Amino acid sequence: MIETRDLVFTHDGATRPALDGVSLTIPDGESVVLAGANGAGKTTLVRHFNGLLAPDAGEVLVDGDPVDEHPVHARTRVGMTFQDPRDAFVSATVGADVAFGPENLGLPHATIDRRVEVSLAAVGMDGREDERIDALSGGEQARVAIAGALAMDPAHLVLDEPFAGLDWPARRSVLAHLRDLHADGTGLVVVTHDLRDLAWVDRWVVLREGHVAADGDPEAVRQRLESLDVRPPDGPAGAPEP
Ligand SMILES: Nc1ncnc2c1ncn2[C@@H]1O[C@H](COP(=O)(O)OP(=O)(O)OP(=O)(O)O)[C@@H](O)[C@H]1O
Image 1 (tube, rainbow, N blue to C red):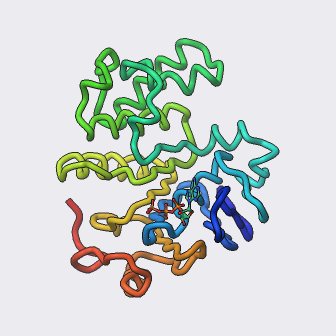
Image 2 (tube, rainbow, N blue to C red):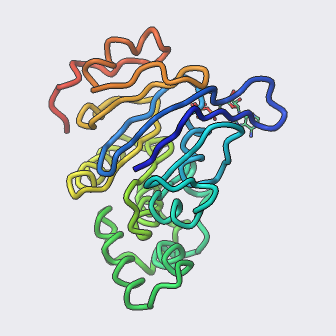
């Protein structure tokens, strides 16, 4: 479970808080979309979930443990991918990059190999360990980034703008893999402006100016999107998905 309590954070040099009292509880296995206009605080919030940022006030807990006291636990339980996955790759090849996290955990080689295999299969990239990352398409790179986070075997997978720069087939492919992961019990937090094809998740949370402005099931939150500067997706929230 990820929990924030009255979380307040101001970036160095900023004149106003990026987060101004955010209290949010995300149980294990829950799928959440985190939406909001530019600058609403989405990225700042999720970077607190695994200790990449530390609050000025308030608390962040993972499984009841404060993240600042148990950073390794938080990073093991909360896997994260970033807006531009190219910035986060640390190795030249797919397999080496996905293995990087579990290697840092000091796991045995056989366990690492198995995790790499399973994680790549989960995103439809099985058998492509030896390919160079810089030779992959944007959609394939996005999937390798997700596999890298999955290889840590996290309870929650947090994806910051996973669809940025993806064309429709790549987006559809990433979405399909996310749905499968969720069905298998992985919790998801998807940060996105684009709510199309995301009505299947458990919950939409909308941030505005560092506050939670709406929080509930997609159908209920949908009615409020326009007033919160988020473009509603076309069609009813329960419309069939690709
Ligand atoms: N490194 C930084 N230094 C100073 N201010 C920052 C920094 N990063 C973010 N901010 C400010 O914090 C606020 C929240 O930014 P954040 O990136 O969390 O929003 P966001 O909702 O993720 O936005 P976007 O949709 O544009 O990615 C904004 O006002 C932003 O200008």
